[in-house]
Figure 1 (cartoon, rainbow, N blue to C red):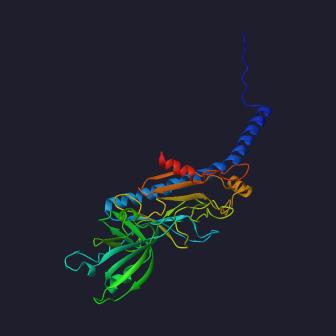
Figure 2: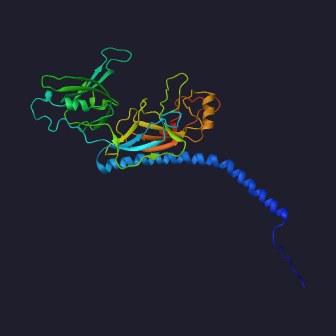
Figure 3: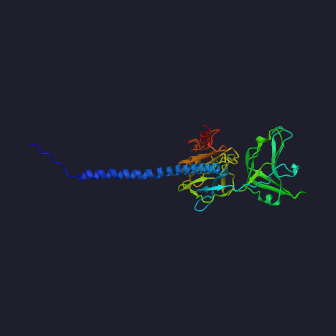
Length: 348
């Protein structure tokens, strides 16, 4: 007769071994979790930013009116006001249309119009003769009330030219002329060089002016993940040493920055044809405006995951990681910069 003895529980030694294994695993998780959590925060912020921009594009197409996203500049609780952690949907108010029935008076010089004057160089060799060295934009024959409504961050729409142009400044207002009308000279973010051809002047009577964007009523603001920001500080690639970090595209001002989409989904105004937004954790390295060299490598090692979200003039969106410098020297090879991977992402 064979008897089988069964054990009713763990021995003390087995229990101690199991507890040691559990404690070791828990300690390992505590070491790994903060880094994984920070990576998720940066990725989630990128997803939120892209989703917000795509939503604004959809609103513009649905409403057949420009819609966009405002990057709210607020220094509360942050080392730099241009570390944006909050986004807001915006809209352009109904447009100002100075000329409802263009070319009906028989006196085109007295009707509201947009006029572009280009001045080329008469002599060379550096730059060569014919190079445009002066670009001016005038909005002619406005009433006083219309002239006072032309403000920075307004947008000129010219259907005949097929283009939208953001006004970045009002340079001068002159008048009244004999017809009690005024002329407003404005500075544009992008001038319509393509429509000029070989000419030096272009005029259109079919135009409207959208006034500066206002918050979209009823839409909540979008908060990015904790400690994650869109860094709106603009790099200076011509400095010595070069300052490589920040966002290329937004102008170096202290106010909010708006990204506006037209009803066809295209970006309204983009000086380089593309905007880049730098997404990172601002608590690990408060100042990323660092010249190339060993300090730049050290900053990259400490700051954690960083991403570039790109918006092309066509409205296409994309993102990729920031390109690191050479780990030995802290320098970028010729033809490379932190935004290279994001550009390649859009060109695929």
